[in-house]
Image 1 (cartoon, rainbow, N blue to C red):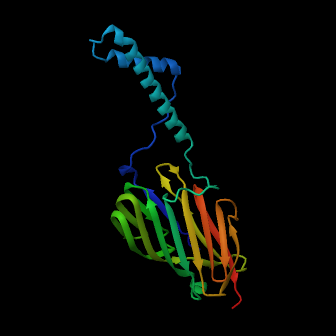
Image 2 (image 1 turned 90 degrees about the vertical axis):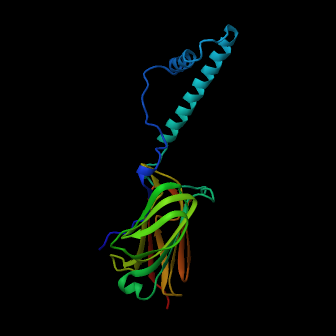
Image 3 (image 1 turned 180 degrees about the vertical axis):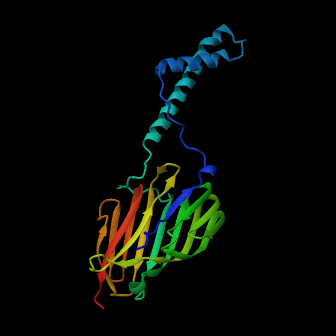
Length: 265
């Protein structure tokens, strides 16, 4: 059985700034550090300071040193809180203008025989970076075609990926492809549609993402049974007689498995 499909948006690290400074342990106390920074600022000030200005200059240098230390601590705390891949569902949806992905799979009667289906996928509000790529599983995805590119300098389908350059703010990318989307369950009881891992990855961290996955079929051909992961805050499933729709807000890596069985037709 081929490996499952992977869809990943991953900026090229060579063209992306490192967002957080490395964490260094300090042996001196915070106040001693601030004192030395403030003293250095005074030593390199022009030597013609008037005596009455010394106290004001010293206070300004001290305040500047304290602000630098506060900013450093904020960056350290932000770096410690970066998700490293663990799946965490978000009860509150990310901002409407945040990155999101919408995917639609259209199953037919032939799909139940050979597993292949038409797939449409759009990424909205991509991160602005010099270079990024969307990667698919080459054994489960074929005939990849870029159908829409907005605020992207270049978007080219190459083998099992889409390579992008000069991705601007609010960028949109849509692709169309054939996907090995559905397969019989191992126990012979119906079918399974597996997707993912979905992720928004930058350097070594994973960041909030919105995903909407819609699987459609002819009226009455299939029936939704259950989902893995199960319905919970941040992960919703809505089923109908001709479709099932998953909406997820999360950080980390999301695998979705939908269990279906023959319908009433």
